[in-house]
Image 1 (cartoon, helix red, strand yellow):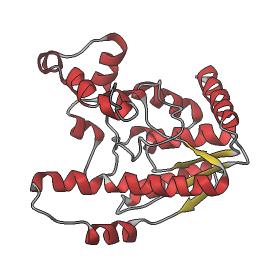
Image 2 (spheres, rainbow, N blue to C red):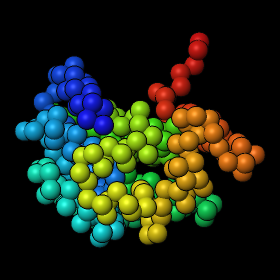
Image 3 (spheres, rainbow, N blue to C red):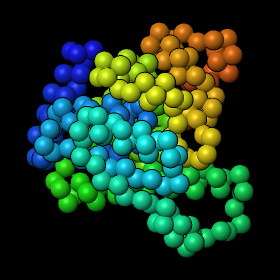
Image 4 (spheres, rainbow, N blue to C red):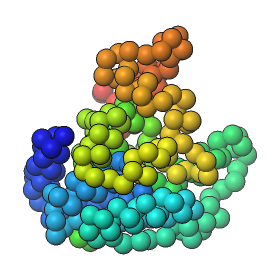
Length: 242
């Protein structure tokens, strides 16, 4: 794990240097992935790292966990509340004669998109790169918001499945409560990653690493379907070949 961490840190420094930037900024949510990214960023750029806590009707526990990580690892933070911005945007967006079933997810996805607007504003002001917290498991099946948490400059955990991120978190000395709590994007109350994906990270990681899956997943081709359906989220916008 030490070798892996050092390689990621060296890579991050290289990417920032190539972009002629001075440091990094990222969202600190209180979840496992963002906590790991936070510590790696601090190690890579001790004097040029900024974590942004962006509550938007967020879990109080998540905010407490984010602040606990920042305090433990001495990571500079700024808290920017986005509830008012979200409410104002929802007031001006058209209600329309749309399907009610799409309302919940459409509104929830505004949260990570508002957070990314905030991060890029700060990145522009500071001359920093925006660091994403997505891991290989989530990226592979498109479990991220397009132009939200997927809109970043670098993804240091992008080649690590969730189980490897957890191992790295243990090595880095993350608080147990963060390592053990159910992963959640915090899109709405009670939302969990595995509940929304319909598959556990353990099953997903096993499939991605060794192409092994349970009978139900094989029968429904669940992972393959999610990978294919989310392909557009992992590439630049399509351009006509003529």
